[in-house]
Length: 110
Image 1 (tube, one colour):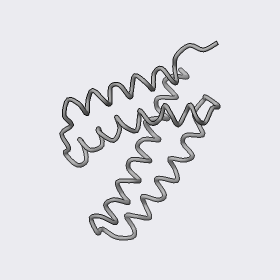
Image 2: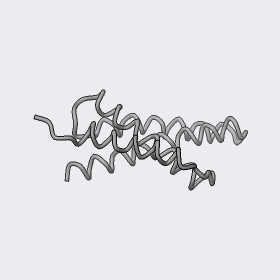
Image 3: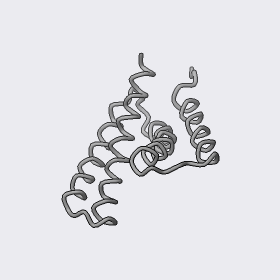
């Protein structure tokens, strides 16, 4: 159950961070305005709090593992929202990152 909770928190964090960055991008680069940027800033702030809910107490480990989630999540976001088509190297790279997440977060320790 702890692994499932952790994975759900990683997905929530990715949604907040990637979505927040996308909103800022839209507000600034696509000239959609300050409200888009403000919404992005709020979402990015929420991302910062979500990471604190992880069951592991080590900030460095959480952030390192989250990096892999961010990579895969960014590609998925691009596919869904921006209709980006990742190539095989994008997919292989994301898979390697997710393997890293599994090793960092869920390998047996003791």
